[in-house]
Amino acid sequence: MKKLSELYPGCGYSDIDIFDIKINSKEVRPGDIFVCTMGVSADRHDFIEEAILNGASAIVVSKDVLYDIPTIKVKNTNIELPLLAARLYDHPEKKLRFIATTGTNGKTTVASMIQTLLGNDRCGYLGTNGMICSKFEEAILNTTPDSDRLYKYFQRFVDSGCQFLSMETSSEAFYRNRLDHLEFEIGIVTNITEDHLNIHKTIDNYVSCKKSYLLK
Image 1 (cartoon, rainbow, N blue to C red):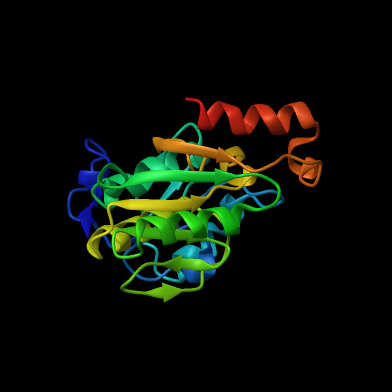
Image 2: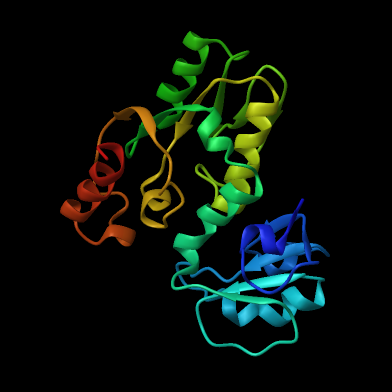
């Protein structure tokens, strides 16, 4: 838990407690901060009222809105989300060494093999099969979750004693800014086919998206 003023110094709200981050208005609970990210077909600014009804303590927006609730305006909510999550969870991404596996096919097999080789007591796995280490094994919603969940999961791995995290990193996660501030020690590309051009439009865009993150 942090004060809103710790997350956004100078915001003028000194006594607001923030316990969690949500981008799904239906999942908002009292004490959450609701971030109005832009999805593939959804603008989450359209769900602010539902988030407030569910108890949101504050909202993060990129548009001019007028609600009787603490409001933080940023330039781009998708880019802001991982930054906010890192602050709320005290930067767990700095306490793990990341190994990223990307590609159209084979991510699950390769990422799982890496965890097996390093040992699940010191290496976590995050991907299609869920999040796994020696202390827990749980299902997750996406191959590479949105940042509101992702950084919470990172902290779980840190708390469980993991030093490494073998991740499946989807092209959509790169494209949607979920992995913007992670430093990968190793990046593995299994293959690239034309399966995900609904997002990237051209094969050149697809390849460039992966390279821009794994080679940074």
